[in-house]
Amino acid sequence: MYLRRCYRKKANQRHAYWALVESYRTARGPRQRVVAYLGEMDEAGRIGVLQAAQPQLEQASLFEKVEPQWVEVDLKRVRVECARQFGGVWLGYELLQRLGLIEFLAEQLAIGREDIPWATMSLVLVLARWCDPSSELHLAEQGYESMALADLLGVPTDKINDDRLYRTLDRILPHKNALEKHLKQRLGELFEIEYDLLLYDVTSTYFEGQAEKNPQAQRGYSRDRRPDCKQVNIALVVSRQGLPLGYEIFAGNRNDATTVEDMVNAIENKYGKAGRIWVMDRGMSSEDNVEFLKQEGRRYILGTAKSMLKRFERELLSQEWKQVHEGLEVRLCSAPQGEEVFILCRSAERQEKEKAIHDRFERRIEEGLTKIQAGCGKRKAPPTQVAQRVGRLLGENSRAAKLFEVSVETDTNGWGQLQWRKLEGWREWARISEGCYLLRSNVTDWSGEELWRAYIQLTEAEAAFRVHKSDLQLRPVWHQKEHRVQAHILVCFLAYVLWKTLAQMCRHAGLGNDPRTVFAQLRQIQLVEVVLPTRAGVEIRKRCISHPTEHQAILLQRLGLQLPESLEMTRV
Image (cartoon, helix red, strand yellow):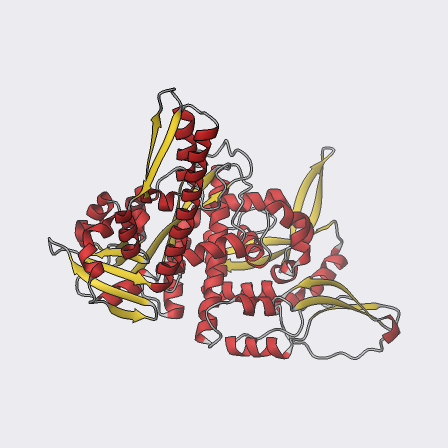
C-alpha cells in the first residue's frame, strides 16, 4: 500500500488531499484501487497511516489464525450481537472456489472506476440466490444483512442497493457463453463427466406484470398452470448426471418442437459436433426434427406420440417381453427401413394409473350423458344448446371421450334429443395400450434395456427444472426488461451449478444424491459478534462461528470441508 496525493478545486483554489491506495495484480496486469480517502494530512499523519497499513502488506487470510491474547473480561456483561446466517453462504463460497468461478469472474469483469468490483457483486447475486433466493430489491433491503456475505466478501451493507444489483446483472449477462464453457470444462475435471449423452427439455416461467418491454414475454402453454400470465420458455441441456451444459431462452409462445434445431446448433457451435446421443421427450419428436437430427450423423433417442402405438398392436399382444426393472418390460422392434429401432415399454405402475383414469372419466361421462338425456325429456332445449353441453362434458373428460359415440338429433318439434352408445373396440385397445409408451432411436447397436435406461435419464432434466423453480425460486420473474430477465435466469443457472456440484460431492462421499439434507444442516451454522467488556473499560468485539454439532461435523468431514473457527478483524 502507498499514499497518493490527489487534487481538487474548490472556490477557485486547488486543495491537496491524500488517499490510501492498494496495488494488486490481475490477468491483465497490475491495477490499483483506493482503500480509503484520508483528507488533508501533515507529514506525521502520513507516516502514522503507513505504519498502520503495514501489516496489511502480509495479505493475511480471512480465516487466519492468530496468537492468543489474554485480557480480563467482565463475564456478567458479555453479550452476543448480530447473528447472521453463515453456513450456507460459506458452503456456496467454497463451491465457487472449487469451480474456479471467483477467479474466472475476476478475469472476465475488468475492474474500472466502480466502488465495488463487478466480479464481487456477481458473487453476491449468485450466493444470495443459492442460499436465500429473493428479488434484488428484497436482497438490498433485508436479505443481505441477514447473511454473512459482508463478512465473506468484504462488501459493507450500505454499499448494497437495488440499483447496483441491477447493474451487476447487466455486466454479467454478456459473459454467458464463456461461463458455460468454463463450467463444462471444470465440472468435467472435478467429476470426470463425459458429455456423450445429452438430455434436452423445455420448461416455462411466468412474469408478474405485463413485461411490455420484453418481446420474449408471451402467453403460451404454461407448465406452471398460469395461463393468465406472460412467460418465457427455457431450454436446458444436461448430462446424464444432471450437470448442465447450456441453456437458451425462447419466446413464451414458442412450441417445444420448434426449439430443437436452434438448441442443437447452439451446442454444436460451442462445443463442436462430437459423437453425442440426443435424448428428448415426445414433445420434440416431430418428423421434421427427426430428419434434422439424422443430418450429419446425429444419433438420438426420442419419445413418440401415443398414437404411433397402433402400428405395433401385434407386438403389444406378444409375450416376448424382457423385464429390465421391477414392474417394467421392454421389447425391441425393427423399423421397416432398418435405419431405426422402436422400443415398446410397458410399466405396471403406469398401467394401473391409466386404467384408474380411464375408469374415472368413463364414469363421469356416462353419468353426465345420462343426466343430459333425461333433461332433454323434461326441459326442452334447442339442439345447439344440447350439443354445447355434450361438448363441454367430453372436453372435461377427454381421456375417455373416444369410448362414446354421441349424436344430437332434432325431434319433430325442433327440440334436441341425445343418443349415445359405448364403442367396445376402443375399450379393448385402451386395455391393451394402458401403461405402454413407445421410443424410437437410430442407435441400433444398443439393446432395448440400454435405450430405455438412457431415455429415463430425462428425469434429470425435469429434476433440474424443479430445483430452479422451488429451491432457487426462479419464478415468478419480476423483471420487465428482456436483458434483465435473461440475466436473472443466468444467475439462477449459476446457483443451480452450485447445487449440482454439492450433489456430486455428496454422491462421492456416500451421502446420497440429494443435497437438501446436507444444505439444511450446514446452513444452521451461524456467525455471531461476541462483545467482551474488559476491566480496562473497552469492549472487544470478536466475530465467532458457532461450533458445529456432531452431525454437522460428520458431514463436513465426509465432504472434505474445513469450517473456520472465527473470522479476522477483531475490533476494540
